[in-house]
Length: 229
Ligand SMILES: *Cc1c(COP(=O)(O)O)cnc(C)c1O
Image (tube, rainbow, N blue to C red; front, side, top):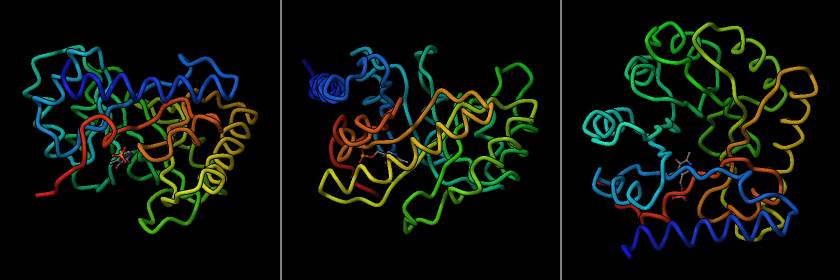
C-alpha cells in the first residue's frame, strides 16, 4: 500500500474513533483531503485509494491541478483567502468555496458562476478565536451574512467554516469549535437549513469531531509536511 493510502486509512480511523467517542455516526463526518503544495500525482494516488474531495488554497495552483486532472469525478473545494481580482477562475473551476467572509466576494462569485455548472456550494468563514489571519466574519455578523448570501442566484449556502488559532491541549482546542456549533445551530433555528460545519485539521480533528464537525480538512496527516517553494 502507498504511504498516502495508508495515511488516508489512519486518518479515517481517527475520524471513526472520535465520532464513536462522541456518540456520532462515523459517516456523518466527511473528509476533505487538502492537497495544496502537492503535485497532481499525489492527488491521483489519494484518488486511487478512494478519496474524492480535495481542498486547495491558491487559485493558480488549484486551477492548474483541476484542469490537468484526468479523473472527472473528483470534487474540488477552494479553502484559501479570497481576493476579488481572482474570483473568476474560482467560480469557473471549483465546486465549493469555504472561505466566504464578505457579501461582495459572494456577489462576484455568483455573477461569475457559469450557467452550465451547478450553483457554487459555499461556507461562510467565521473568525471564531480572533485568529491572526484576520479572515472570516465576526461571529455576530454570521447570521446576516448567511441570509444575504443565501439570496444570491448562483450560490447555495451549505454551512460555516473556521480555522481556530492552533493550540495543543484538547480542552482549549474544543472551545472555539463549541462556539461554532452553537452559532451553526442558531442559524439553522433561524430558518436557514445548513448541513456543513467545516472545522478540524490534522492536529485538532478529534476536538472538532467531538464538537460537531461534519467535514474535516486534512493535509499534513495525509500527504506529509508541506514544503513551500
Ligand atoms: C492547509 C489547510 C488545512 C490543512 O491543514 P493540515 O494541518 O495540513 O491538516 C486545512 N484548512 C485550511 C483552510 C488550510 O489552509
